[in-house]
Length: 639
Image 1 (cartoon, helix red, strand yellow):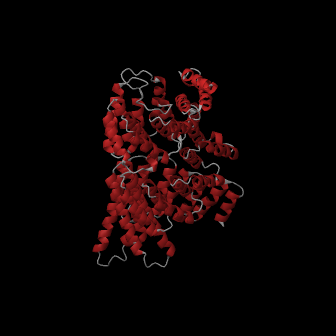
Image 2: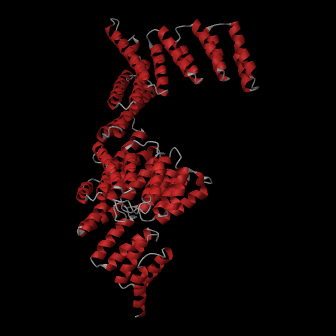
Image 3: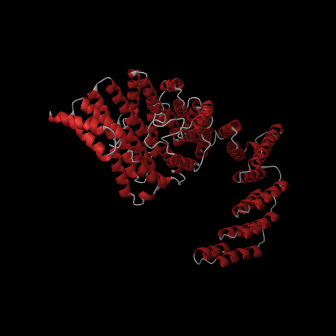
């Protein structure tokens, strides 16, 4: 009756004092451990943790063997954010406790608190002690003449607690960047989980069996993730993902991870199969839909790929990751203008889209691909402080500042000796933005830093960047972005043969979608080198290879146009320059000049006049186009 009355006071009248008074009277009438426990929980319901702790301690005095109550007191102390007091309590409780599940639970809670406070050595020490206690109990059970059946080491709940401790130990080692110990802890956890599955094999509870099989699948995924992302052992990771699916055939995270591995390896068939299976289990899975779109894109079926993204955006207009991917896909399909319609549609359906960092990032990509770098910078700037989109936005901004025209850094516009033709203010801005990156020690960040250093074109800076890139390549030998940066440094240092050798090596590698930009830049750089040495067939093959993967590559069409022009095939050259001019949104004076020149040579005088006038409207001071092309084309028309 007291409990019912107390609940009415709290829920109906919101009278906290009367609520507590009911439990106080209960304790006065029956000062048992259970009554004090109820009073403590009542104090917690009205957010009075200090009073709750005192009540729990009174309950513990009356029942000192109640390890769950000791654990409850520790957790209440943690909830007050008085972490040192909580640590002192856990230590005191451990000193007075006896071996058993309760002691191990207290050790685990203390270790978890140490881990959350980033006190990794202390967390590791407590977990190792907990594991040692467990193993000691196991040995005692094995040596006991009464057998194991009555000993707690064979109890499923104790084994489960042991697995939980090993998982936390793996987290501690991961935070300490100790790969071998992470693997050891997770392998031990899998071994213990195997014992749990063996122990419950004859159980009548199908729910328990399914729960433990899912736990084994989760352990396989943890170990596979470590192999994949930390040790870069993709074969071992793939085997573990498959093992996870044997324990839980509908485990979507495992299927997604396998699909991503197959996609990165270029195995489109197996990736497609996994994605279809995922869609059967979860028809609204966005990651699977996006991968299916990527597969269709790589197969050249741009309409189906676009359809998948359209379906995602129809279901959720604020799915900005899908919107950003769609912008990139349409750029590579050579249909960037279509992306503007999806951006407008998203802005119309989602009223606060213009303020969302994800939308700003997607819009920034669109403007960057459209060569509208000022607008792109403005959009990326809105996203640069966001937790999710900030790093990507900062990277885009830095790349624009060090190379706004997306030109080759080694072109002869400025001398490497004196650094002429370099925008030092833009480089300083890029350096400031680089300092905002959350992880400046990652390989991609170090590569980006090397590009910033090389952008000054000063020999000392280029040599410094080169040394840093050599170290990166030694760490990760077949990483294409680092090899591309190294080749760029070699070109700046006028060591073209060495750069060519690196680029040839890359051209023989299997294409990987996640490094697509780096692969394409490498092919085009090598094509430039081949053109310089008169190997037009090899250069043409590389440019076409680039366009197979990216129909939006302006540089690819420029190289093909340059080759045709050198071979005096002016009509063919004009077709390629037309594509480059369209993709540049008519924003490149040099491309317009080349197009008009080849129109003139192909005797397409009217088109030559039109393009010349367009270039002069946008770039009035562009040299020679008036005298070299416009006046000659007009004279030819009169004739």
